[in-house]
Image (tube, rainbow, N blue to C red):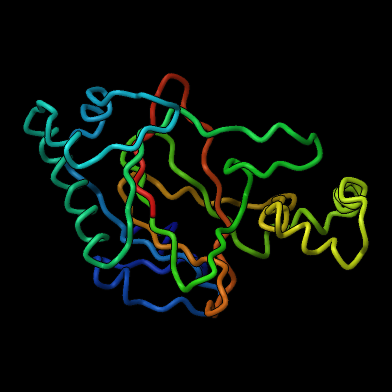
Length: 232
């Protein structure tokens, strides 16, 4: 097991998919990692897939059509198995070939795109699952190492100016436009990179959640390299 993950209070490390879905978040732990060193050539798969948009969903049929080396076939089987495990669990996994996500450049004082540290919110009890097979991997950060952006005085004042409405409606405005989901790292904060091949389960903000939601961000992509990401 990785010392980085197993010695961190925020992360629970497991060795099977069954443990990943059945373990409970508790205390400071709001991220679970099925830590894996995967065989196979995932770069070959990425090189043979067709990017149709900046984010292109890759389906099972697309993978099966690829002419691959033995190492490529090994990688494909791993991906197909992960998709099947999550589907059988009741999730709706999506495999994405990524050039980049859309940037939020509307405001210069707050960003609400996925490159900003944020939490996921759901009205129902659910979790976020993700695995990066190729390319830059996502980061998480401990909840006590960040500040909610809407609580930063200068940001809050600019949001109030933008809202230009009653104080009673302001909190609703912050939620409606997802400003409240985003966080700013404190000085000397230490993000944790999720690495390649690991399948993660991250706590989501929902009414039944007993722990704080896991704060995470998409990475800036490596120059000239696509990401292959499973997420649901």
